[in-house]
Image (cartoon, rainbow, N blue to C red):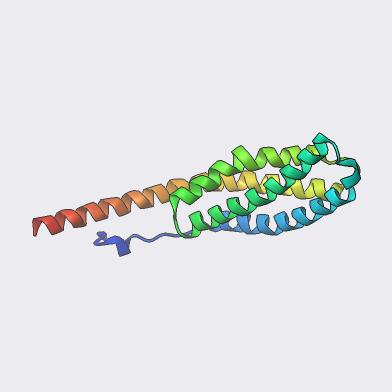
Length: 160
């Protein structure tokens, strides 16, 4: 049985499934952002009321939130930062999903490409949340092991 002697003995592995889902979501988000931007520009004359301006504001907030959410997810997964992964897991169901559902329901006309990309994003976000919770659980175990080793090292230094 291999005993962990130091912090360097405890390894961290990023979750490949979470990384793959986020990578796919990056590309789909860019495509969605461009297409929905064209949709807003195409229908700009009809968006002069309160509801239309709300759609534009929600669209811009969604773009910014998606950028920040994916950045937090990458940082949390690749660097095993539980706080960043927690931000990722909180913003996905509480902020990003409701915004996307609102924008999905706000589409008028035959814009199937927008509907399909939003549906793909929603599916990927559900996968990201499920795999992200699993990854968060693994990382908390990792941090717990690191804490135990550091406490043991401190105790050994105090005893010598």
